Amino acid sequence: MGTVILLHFGIIIASAQWFMPEAAFLSLPLILAGILTEEKRRKSKNFLFVIENLSCSIASNVIDNAINVAGSIFIGQPVTFRFVKKWQGITSREMTYGIFE
Image (cartoon, rainbow, N blue to C red):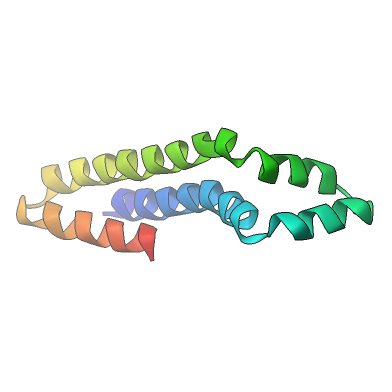
């Protein structure tokens, strides 16, 4: 049971590590990134480049989704082997709520 709990929290943390930068890039308007670049703020040129070429960073979204799917598989397998199959559905539901909430 401890393995399942550790896997659950590990996958949620891994998913958050890929999602947080993507959320940061999408939340800052392009105009504000340009203003920060004109003020010569630290790393603002890199940030502006990523925002201008946001379609190239789609790999971040793909990796995040792959982590979520793999996480459900890695947690569903031990639950199925240790408990009755009815717990697999409950575990998948909780995993989905944990990742997307």
